[in-house]
Image 1 (spheres, rainbow, N blue to C red):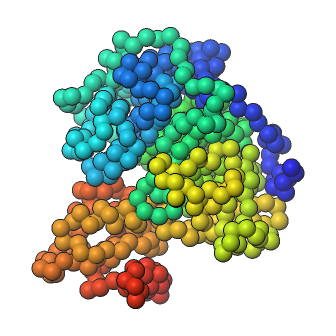
Image 2: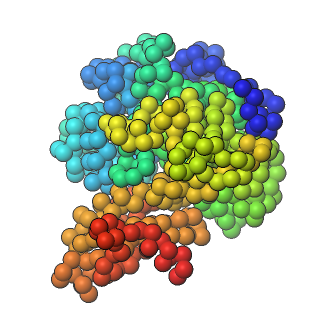
Image 3: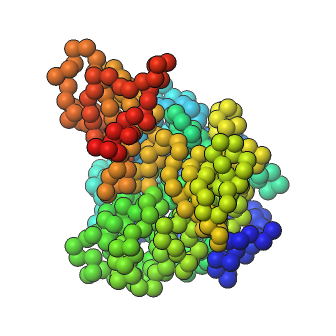
Amino acid sequence: MNHRWYAAWPAWTPRKIEVVKPVTEYMRSWAEATPDHVALSFYGRDVTYAALNNLVDRMAWAFKGLGVKKGDRVGVHMQNCPQFVIAYLGALRAGGVAVAVNPMFKGAELEYELADAGVETLVGLDYLYPEVQKVRSRTPLKNVLLTSLKDFLPEAPVFPLPDEALAERKVFPDTGDLMELLGRSPDGPICLVSVSDMKNSLAVLQYTGGTTGLPKGAMLTHYGIAFGAVGTMQWYRFREDDVFLGVTPFFHVMGQMTLMLSPLTAGGRVVLMDRFVPEAVAQAIGHYRCTFWVGATTMIIALLNLPNISDYDLSSLRLLWTGGAPISVELQNRIKELAPQAAVGEGYGLSETASHGGACTPPFRYRAGFAGTPQLGVEIKIVDEETGTREMAPNEPGEIIIKSPTTMLGYWNRPEETAEMLRDGWLYTKDTGLMDEQGYVKFLGRTREMIKCSGFSVFPAEVEHLLYAHPAVKETAVIGVNDPYRGTSPKAFIVLKDGYEGTVTEKDILDWCKENMAAYKRPKYVEFREALPKTAAGKLQKIVLEQEQQTA
């Protein structure tokens, strides 16, 4: 099929690719071909491909020894660090299903996700464990392995370390030490994934809000994530001499696919950073001569707004991509000043399609206002929002639907919501967009309620669910409101229970949210109401609140 968007693709991008092995085995091939090439760099500590491959094999054997069987879910509860890569890839080689658990989650959020996924084995960072410990008895957890950032830090870090890396190592009862276990595990090759069954074998549960309600696990296959890794490599022309800035969170599908799996499939070096600190990121780009980074637009803005940013050398960047919000003309001009060789672009993707299965700017073919064209192996249509069957003419808005080898099998244990999203091989995104005559896709808005904050997905129903745990909250409704920095931020409308009026303030609610919710999903604004707008049948009318905010 000769799609109209092929004309915009780079000359090097093939029309078709073949995926012949699990994603972990592409990394093994590099360990055999270039064993001494650096795979990971962590504040000055280098891990070669041979060493990483050995550690991943040991991790897989360790999981097998703990009783992890094919299809068992394995939680990975960490910021970006070598241990994340080892645990994630080790789970895949052991035949398990990797569940990347958000390290910003608080107890109630952890309890929900661990229980919903049925996670019995968890690998986490020691300083994050206290939140797990609060709820462990209410989860299926049987095995918890802990590690410290210190386990992979060099004696003399090349950049300032975050506070958590400087803290004393923590030890907790009823947990195991990851490094001790790896040290006594077998080191022979292991991969319990059948190549012939990769399209049906579950590899990852990537939690997302789906269409409505609490987060759901998008079931991604071994074939899907391998296709995404290889396809992303081909799209950007990743090479073994590329250096990737791995600061975008790996628990998020964009970081997982574009800055972990695809770089290791291409044989490149990933510069890992525990968290985003603009000064440290600027230093890392210059020190390691980073060539590629994809990050939330807010990250790029924060980096370029450093007062002394011109003192740093960003000239090595050849590709700089963003997600979560469009790139303004001012931002593009600033990038060109500081990184004159960098092609810039953005993208539109979903957890349900392993990030790759969407639209992305073809390198050197950026068009302002458009996310880009369908990526390698991906088909996108714009259809009418009433029936979902009539394809819209160029430049006419409608619902974005996607067909891709990376598309999820469905939502974990949610057949009704799976049937709503997947129809005849197409993923119905519930997002509104248009496609022009050249196949460029413009994202116009999310018809579902999801709020996009600094590139993170925030789901009002989940925030409302958490707010109801506050003893003073009688009713609540959460919507997204414009935010000049984050793009959109949650605002909570709250009706207080009798006896709390005048005693509970907006600040009290915001402080409580700080203790009970991840930073990106906390309401930035709180407004108390005597009542919330409802239909005659008693159904909440959020559209009324949204209209009020637009005219305020």
